[in-house]
Image: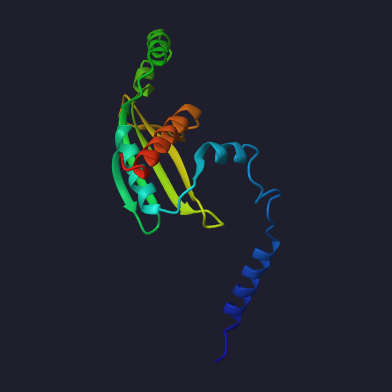
Length: 179
């Protein structure tokens, strides 16, 4: 099989362009707050019973007002969500004040109105196989008064994570004691 000269030329040009691209410095370096986020989101439990942890996680999420969504027990994944009000009175007041002065009468429409909080939990054995590692992340999608998405963000509130893990620890203990 003979390759036409144009195809060979295009292939060499593509390889030449790709060869000129460099990886940015620190590309694979984790962010400075990576360890703090990881400690906030992860806990280890001295058990090897993944099914028990999975059932406890599902119960805790429901107790916290979440509706269970997709879950894949073989992969150790549980997801859930809940709707909540996102109205910030000071944000609305500022929008009315500044929008009412003629600067932007549609400013009130940009104020936060509602949100959906999503939880994703991953359950897996520890590296030594003697414990179960649980990692939870909370994200939220915030809509404005006009029904548009204002922002999507990861929730970093330590109290939310602490409440989840405190409740989960109690649930695991009660499940282990069959209470």
